[in-house]
Amino acid sequence: MFFVNAVCLAIPVAFLVLSVVLVTKSFNKRGNAKRSMLTQLVSFGAVLAFCVACPIIANAASPEAAAASLDPVAKGLQYLGAGLSTGIACIGGGIAVGNGAPAAIGATAEDAKNFGKAIIFVALGEGIALYGMLISILILNG
Image 1: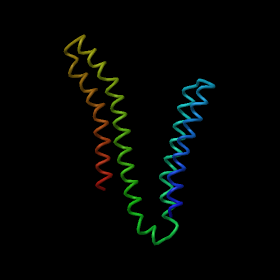
Image 2 (image 1 turned 180 degrees about the horizontal axis):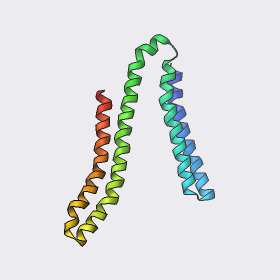
Image 3 (image 1 turned 45 degrees about the vertical axis):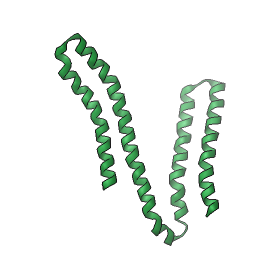
Image 4 (image 1 turned 30 degrees about the horizontal axis):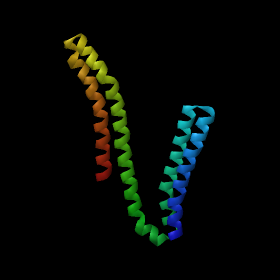
């Protein structure tokens, strides 16, 4: 069991280190930032998939252990889903507010009557983050 745990910890670390080295070399040779970023995101996705699948596969070795430890795996995936829904929604809300708030300030500076209309668009952007948090609460309590 120690060997399985060591491999489950060593392989993702090796993938991440290898991806950083390859992206750095690729960027220094070609100077293509978009390709380097895409390579880094793909390698991160591969490591994430490995880290999620490895405990599930390790627990599937024996049916008794799998039945006893399925609850912690399900709980971990539940936390992962809740964190992703909040995080992605907050990133989207930040982008929306970052674009909408300067426009609202500019519209209000030109004409004070536009404040009510402009603040609605900023509030809609903030609402995205609240929806993500609501989904997280539903995932954790469901």
